[in-house]
Length: 240
Image (cartoon, rainbow, N blue to C red; front, side):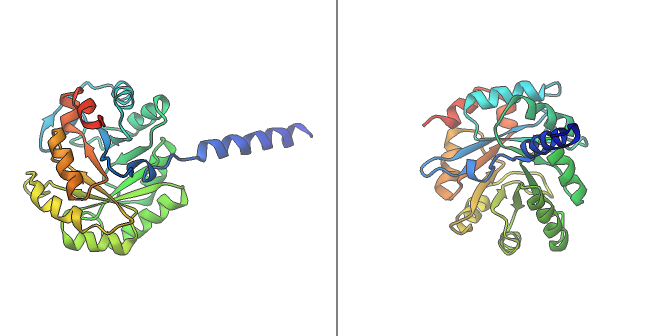
């Protein structure tokens, strides 16, 4: 085998290795347990600064050691103080599935997220119409990524089901007022059909909140602010 053939074969193997993704949806389903997607979140529009100087890699190590099933990385610089570099740094220190959480409005962002180590993206149905949502989902599927479609009401839930989103996140936060009310969230969680992974977003601040989300139908909960402020909470949320 000549040099070009040898280096070509090696490069093919290396690219195939780098293309591999970790199963995000599969990591969130375990009968009898509510899994935790632990989020790296320095700031938010509703809370302002949370932990402004947090080191993403250090937080990710702590989350993995604490039993998180997956890690969500906020990559939006505006209001959240995140970046794609955070995603890349987290990928270097953990093999847990990574969710890129941003305001996805262009399939190019999906490619960026994958190139920085994401295994899944969040599609905010309140932000995008169905045609764009399909483009984002297709871009994710083209790169072997999972998709979490975030919904807030029955109409958005129907859209998520029609779009074939494998993971449906039900957010308890009112995007108009930024207030959190888990009542409607729990009702919507119960409306997610079998075969889909239902995720409770926002409002989980204790084991009691997690258990309530599970009783309502959630397979997992995405927890950010509470974990950033109290790292010891993760052990409470993940204990058997």
